[in-house]
Length: 264
Image 1 (tube, rainbow, N blue to C red):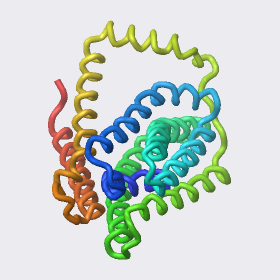
Image 2 (image 1 turned 90 degrees about the vertical axis):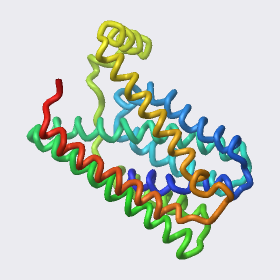
Image 3 (image 1 turned 135 degrees about the vertical axis):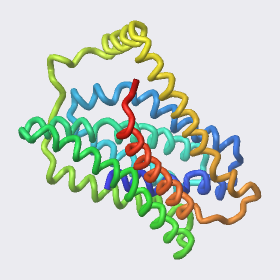
Image 4 (image 1 turned 30 degrees about the vertical axis):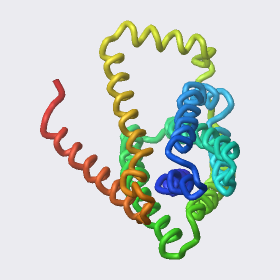
């Protein structure tokens, strides 16, 4: 539910802003606000989740993203900017709090460690593959087939997030980080900087990841105007579903190639 709430929005963010009459420059600023807030808050949400509780952080994700979806009903630039900032905060929570809760809960209940890797592999296949494809097709159904408008996927996302939040509240237990490892943020940043400076491999890995993320976010921003430079009508959800299908096939192919060769 949490992942579906995120994937449903992806194909229609740029398109929605363009229907409100904003140009590429204004839309670019909105995207930068979202990516920037995710970058800034992403450095602290993990520590806050460890201290305040991972379940609480996951609930905060749902609430924050629902509020972000609500702002999409407004054509006011300031309201949309607030929504992008909220969306960035929610994204940083999505990719930290849920996994932390799962790992801690898995260890607390004494399950076998190999089950954890199996769970993550299935989560990647379902969450980043199958669910994303289905969300793209569902969004296409709402906007193109049912003609409910470009804001409909965001309303549907809010519904999925509300259902997910209800499941979390009713069935999850709270867990926290190790109190002995709860250092202040400045100490954590200092330790991270020392680790990067002392190990060239960590620095290179960070650079590679940054370059990949930069190219990916550029693609996320530009694919809609690239495919409809003159505001032609295109099936955004269906195109997004094909992107995610290609991504899933690429991941499967990469895992097969890696199994045949050993890293050097």
